[in-house]
Image (cartoon, rainbow, N blue to C red; front, top):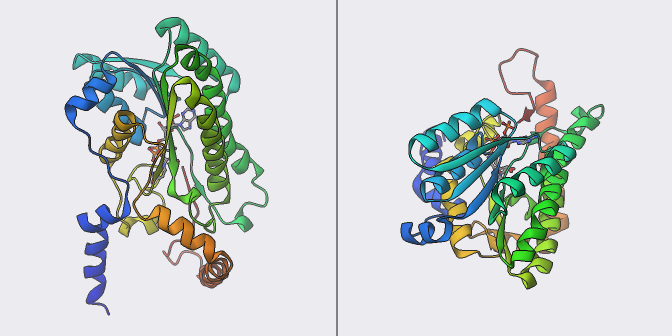
Length: 310
Ligand SMILES: NC(=O)c1ccc[n+]([C@@H]2O[C@H](COP(=O)([O-])OP(=O)(O)OC[C@H]3O[C@@H](n4cnc5c(N)ncnc54)[C@H](OP(=O)(O)O)[C@@H]3O)[C@@H](O)[C@H]2O)c1
């Protein structure tokens, strides 16, 4: 068994596993340029990870990119890099959990640029924490709902009217595959907040399409960013780099499909719905066994016991 573990690990990290697991990107360079040249694209969470990679990619392809996040230094750094390369980008430091700040952001963006052609709703926060470690942490649920749901909702409410008036625009939601498969232990705060926005977004899309506004929900699997880094179990799971994941966002902007998912998500959704109860029993039994083991570990044993958050 010891001999097979490195082989399995190598396979799990290999390009084949990666191809099987994640949604695919890749667009024709000319098609991307045509889709974004001279267009105004607002990317939230553009200071790190997928948002930063997306902002860079779109700006280099000719878009005017508006970068939103809290970390002002990072935004200014990215904007400077882009400006030095001749691209058009602007930093809008904003805490999206502050709804008045989001309203002010909308007002400023519309005053300075007139409209937004594409909104990439990407900013997010993930918390992986068992419920018994959350009994006194109501703030975990408040902050995930604030950044993964309420802030993005406020932004859509602010930008959609002008898109509908102009009879054009595209909304992109960076969602997670977790909202399409049965809820996993420890992800209550994160998955509930991402599911809330997924449902809001698809409902809005059904209305806005009549006015020429399209919407794409992207169900990402694993992207190797600072968000996923603290979860050690992801180390051996195939994942995209931020630049690869940004290609998936490019595909959303060029092709404008209603959804982009890993190929197996549709199958998994149907199958797991059909066997929901037995699956829940298996998952909760596995969790109970693992949880018991972790609790029996002596403190300072060096084995992972902590919860993950970013
Ligand atoms: N990584 C994955 O495996 C994975 C899988 C599926 C889906 N996703 C989704 O992909 C998106 C991007 O995640 P990532 O992996 O790129 O994570 P990341 O590297 O941690 O980036 C998250 C971004 O969100 C911004 N952000 C967080 N709180 C904010 C706030 N209150 N106001 C404004 N901006 C805020 C952060 O900027 P500041 O800290 O500067 O504000 C940062 O730019 C998220 O929506 C996530 O749920 C990720």
